[in-house]
Amino acid sequence: MTGDAPPALWRATVPVFLSALDRISQILDKTEALPDPAAALAQPPAEGMLPAGQQIAMAVQFMLRIAFPLAGRRVPEPRAGLDLAGLRARVRETRMLLGSLSPAEFKGAETRTIRAQAGFAELEMPGEAFLHRFGLPNLHFHQAMAHVALKRAGVPLGKADFDGLHDYPEGFSFG
Image (cartoon, rainbow, N blue to C red):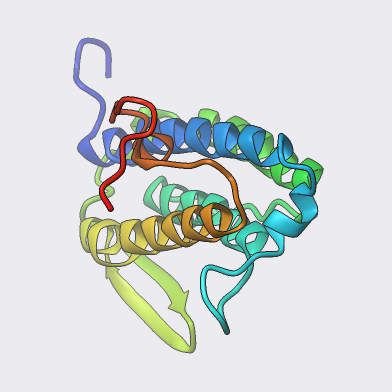
């Protein structure tokens, strides 16, 4: 692949996920600064939903559930805890695992048949559809739910903490 641009689905996953892991790490730093980080991680985004810590773990796991099948590899399953130390360990391990994927492994990923579970549904679809219709929506859902839950728990989060791009003056509010 010398001189060629990396495959589109590698570009749409690995670098994007590494950036999302940076965001999650920074959110965990802000959570750790609270008087009771464990209580914040136990906060659900809404009644009946999974707590923030589990939402973070699921977002991180979705990065692997997306990238590894697209690369034609089996999905690893980090098993660290759902506390602050465990979530940090999941982020570190996921960063390392994503770094182990070469762009060359994604060649032909657009049409590679991917099989996955979606709740009780069994999916089978081409890689590009898998990424855009299943993978990314689920990753962003869990990442957003963690963001909402932690904000409800008192972690000072804004849009910039979610995407790393926005910038607003201190005290700015949409409300």
